[in-house]
Length: 268
Image (cartoon, rainbow, N blue to C red; front, side, top):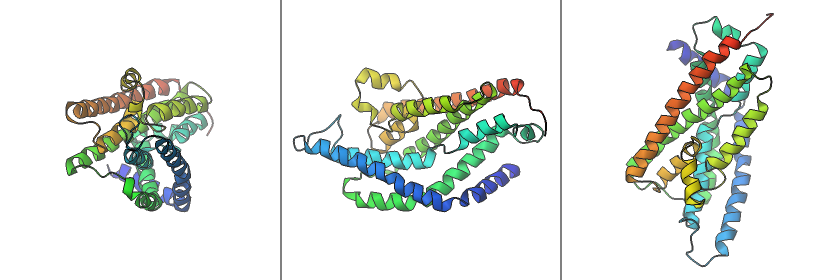
């Protein structure tokens, strides 16, 4: 355990080099969010007073997109998938085969350290932006809802990491994984609820998407926070999220064991 704590500490130190970059990335990342909110305000302005879109009031929609930004800051994979693919392509993975260090745990430590530092420096502009829109921001209905939301965000982060890890491991078989990573990102952006709430889609399509891991990256945690899933539906969704995390972990281990058999490195 001590060696992984050391890796975590090294990850913190390396990430702190880019602390100013993180602050400005978070600050300028609010510009597209502001544009999205202005578009939705214009849409609601053209409707009769009190009209909803897919059961969302204007305040509900504003809260949804603010939470998208918050969950994304906590869970998004930054450069981890590219770095994993580069380790395989460049032969750097060889050093991990000769040391008593689990590569999955090593990358997980770096992922968590990176998210921790990014969140610390991103929280200031995000908090100020949220304060500006405080009139339309919804708070959790009770402490239990807030706790389940926090658990769901942690599970979303784990699932996000395992999906990126598996995609990066394709570098064992193909020379350039960028196409696969971009395809995954595009589909994830649509199917996870980043672009719009999934429950404004036709019912059959929303239910179909819930059978995939993507809604549990963003849409489900936010729905928990907003109280849009309760009772049996809440526990069923949480069970599905846990199931996908377990399957993601198992797939990560399987692809690694298969890929390492095909791996070869020369020189040094």
